[in-house]
Length: 288
Image 1: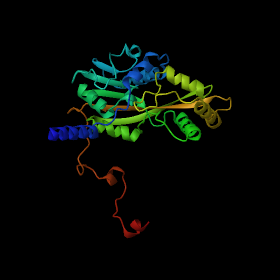
Image 2: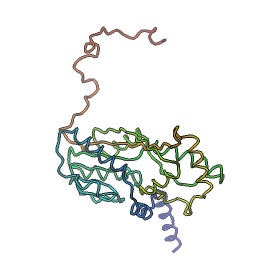
Image 3: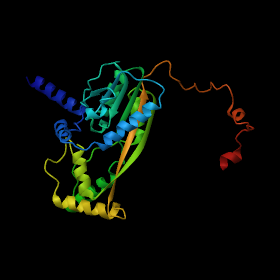
């Protein structure tokens, strides 16, 4: 009995060490989204995706779009909820779009892997998510205000990836020809309180699993608003809010795709291609 208890305890400890705590409270996130009335950034992503697809000389007939707002994508393909396990059929799509919800995923790499396996060979993945500069103004002011008023910080902001790291995740997920780029949307508001209300209207309220379960103190909010006004207001008194949107592009591997040449396989020397004279490196060159 004692041995069995110890074995069970060791198994529980091992499982806890292997399973990271959940990032997102999915029930809270669903409630926030159910009350959402503002989707202008998602509309920006729809337009951006359409523009990028128009530049590709190819028709996609089996598209799946992972989105919390399916009505925005009705004309593009089948909508899929952004659950931890995506309702995607392995090899069933020639296009998968992850539309501005990957930042809430408990396992972003797992989401990318699921998208990769859902694609047919030479199928395209487009992923849009908030990047590390998103709302940097608000995050800085809230952090400073809370530290000043309460002497501490509470979990209220999602960890958001940088473009270089996110591009590497595409390779980890098995995509070929991975590319990560970004665009910035700067939105002006009357004040920080207006911005906070708009974030709730977007369905982007705090749904962190480890969040503090009581409302932020009013004096913290007012201090953050004052800091925002003093640091980020334009000449007319309106404040600026930055939304950094990263686009991830990758293809399911296929033999028809271009591949880099092997090192040493070049048929012409660089000096010949540039019509210059090649000379060996001298000691003087190295000293410079």
